[in-house]
Image 1 (cartoon, rainbow, N blue to C red):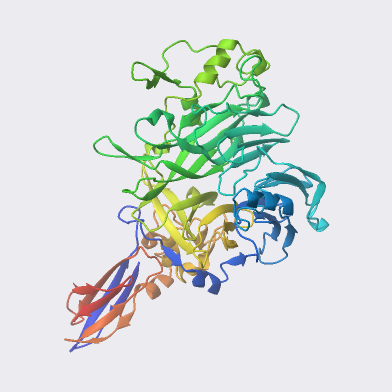
Image 2: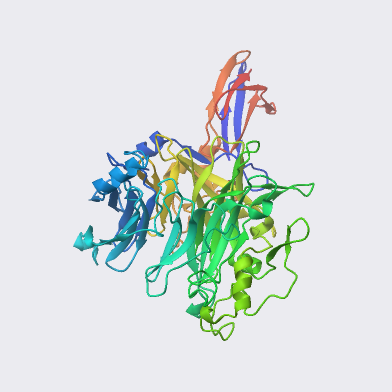
Length: 633
């Protein structure tokens, strides 16, 4: 709580400013507790930047904590930057498309400078000494093994020309096409367009010892103009034969035919040990299933407002590797309703949808209904393993299982978010969410998942969800940081909990910002408490990084309630923050200004004509700027 006073005797008037700290019960989370411009971040050494002349589109970021490097894929370049300071110690590999490929691309009607170059789109750890990278190669997808050495001291960063290979089915042809891939063991699972025109989209397994496998070709029930967002491997049990790969994408919904082009977001699953069918679905997935991913706000009249366009996915690992949490960013496709949302999903809810009824088209109007007939054994979508059955390979699956899988890839029940609604949403704002990354932070009153949300105007929102009661949470927008001076859209993000840094890519460069700025929350216990930042605590002297394993007598932190009265009551700092005195002449007008450290503090001005008189609230005229008033005296 902060109080400022204006006091004078006889003909002077006492004016007081009372700032009430936002608590979880009565506050609005629409304003950030701290908002910093790019200039502010620069001034306090809060941002480091890397850009590269003659390049752009820094969309592939790969963190390597062991080597202390951030690997970056950009246009015509592979980069190796220092995790401690990305603006220093960079290594570069110039990786352009061959001249004849560029000319061929240009003859096909593509732009020689924007299309007919090599955009590095795929970047994965391959083994202890190499990365695996793929680029568009001027509409000739190409992949390479990048040697990075075994130790940091090796300072190796090069492509072996003899290890460059065809990237079809691994990297998109067109730099505008989205793709998603994950490298598990020595196998690459990729959602990508496999043709020059971008009409044949597939989920494709390549590399490794097992045969290459893909989704059914030119069948809209499997994939219908998909835009791939992310891919992850998740174990199902202790038996590796049950391991599954999940793809997140959005596509034109087949079940919404008759309503025009409607976009649905999806989660698709398949078994890692899928070998395809014996007579049908040869070299095609036999375990591929997909379900709708719903992120919506329930209305009072039973209708739902849908955020239908999936933009990004972050998999937060928990202590149980089989049950990570899935954080997602959605936007709307509506021209009437504009907004963005974060929805959170659990693996239990995802698995429940895939164990539910299959979607089936029947009846005179060919409506989509739950399949009511007998589902063949083994149930489509189950992996061949000793955990759930006796089949050793999908090639041993009966024909009726293969045929059912071929015609029923879609589940009827959608996957709904935890709590049945978005975790965090914004509507009527001049930007949209584009990326998300999450850090699990231990605080004095429990752990908090801190969400860092990138936007299309080059800003990052720092948000936490605080338990409000047994069934509900309240979301707090802690910070809004303008990390790109040119407001370029954020297209990639990586987080290092070890180094407490966030790495952010856009079309114009890469920036690095710390996960917290505790010292900027003010120089008093109350200000530190009002910040409600799980990274920060009052240590008796300053607002500083909270470390759970340290024991300090004066350490104060209360993320859940953020109540400085309870937390800082014994602090001498309290009075210095709470009260200030100013003077004004009775009958005059004065311009009163107060900008609290927390943008969610509630500001009230009071006046007192005589020390013995009670305080009264000033009739004010609110002017531009938070906490600025023209007081009528």
